[in-house]
Length: 394
Image (cartoon, rainbow, N blue to C red):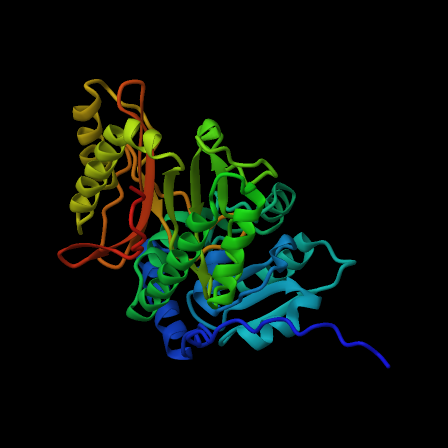
């Protein structure tokens, strides 16, 4: 008689999250808004290659962007999605109101793009491309600019600004992502104890966000002890946490490709938390100043200045850090950032209601100690709303 394996315990009932997505009317409004911006800038066609902007305009959501994928968006007429042919069934199932130009594995992607572009763009027309996109390989770009007789112009800023102001539906997705991020962070902080391994904490974080209904995030959770805090973007190792370690967790869940990151630093021993409390107080006060400055029509540079002024008052000297946050929303691997617009010195970006930022407050000082925290904040009509709600560790 066969022996059946013991039944696995069933997870507790959890609220069911609906499948993320938007009606066709939302994509039509996005397309119309982008075309208004194109007409204002004198552009006849856009070559869109960043996965975030392709997703924004037509809904494509897969992991196939390692192969060249592009949305050709004319000022008039039907957009054309150029994709690897094996991805066409997925693209047809997911996208809205686009034509498809699939290329086989025996065809160079540049050849397919030249073919599609010459059918849509007339000589001497102005065509926008994303100069800072990681998904436009130099070999492809070299072929396009030599073989397609148009006037090429960088449209990166146009597309970033279009995608960065979220609609009510998108804000709903961001709120859901924030709840999922809070769930994952609570699980990670609870698991980060003396004797636990970094990879075990990462496993708990993933388990919590996926069981709660989250999608694959654009970036892996960052799990490390504070002796390696300066090794930014370092994922977990198999190292065990010691009883006097500080634990840094930075993560984001995803819901329909929308992300809401946050970070928390937790000292395992109360004596260490007390020793670093001056840094924690300064960091949190600077975060409050940052969020108070996060208002419509303020510049990214002004927001950074408001944050830095509080930190410098606390430490009594000039404080240098590259930024205190960045635009966040739609994200695809290898980033939940989806762009490069940061709250930093020299950035004239004007904030608008509907933008969301991953706001960060780091303090590292020999006298005050070390502390770091971050949240996702939404710019509203009269200020900002912090979407992530995980309490700061004591």
